[in-house]
Image 1 (cartoon, rainbow, N blue to C red):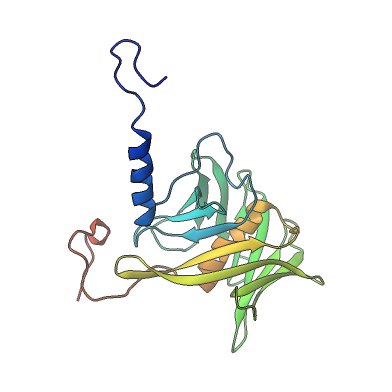
Image 2: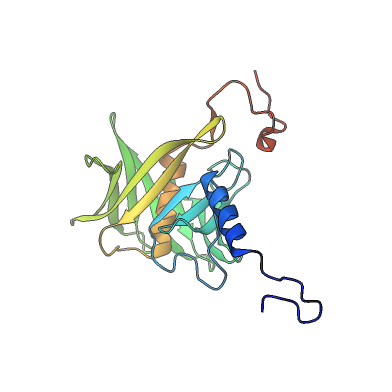
Length: 231
């Protein structure tokens, strides 16, 4: 139905105007949520973890660039504990500090059961994550990659390449934050949500905790900077 049966008012905006508005929003870095009725990460764990502004929540975009889920914590910082929810508000997983080891995080489902555990390892020249499944058995490692198209490789314990992972610094109107992505290459030994949580764990344990200033003066119309002290 495109018009009200009572007053004949148009109920659907001009499709050309909608297309133009969406194109303009995407050009300016805007993102669209996945339509209701489709479960988050229904097409798999391939995703990008990003922000749309310096003080926005972290967002997961799927392979088609539609927003799958949002991440919330005590503040805008990428610091556990964190809660990930779908576009309909449904709880997907939480990322908590694992008290059994330093520099370790555990992803928990809605029932409080472990989905996976992520332990940071480091040497004098490199750092990565050890990945354990819901039983806390080591199943994979996120290692620095020598591939030109990725920063990290997820390698199965005693096996081959499972996924590639990367990070890149992105300018957010005068602030800089790192954006992370995961692309699967084989069947994973953990659930899809555990693989998604791995990307968030990599951000927390290996990436920027929060955006940093990339220029001295804030834009005059940037509401995200209200209350910040500039020097």
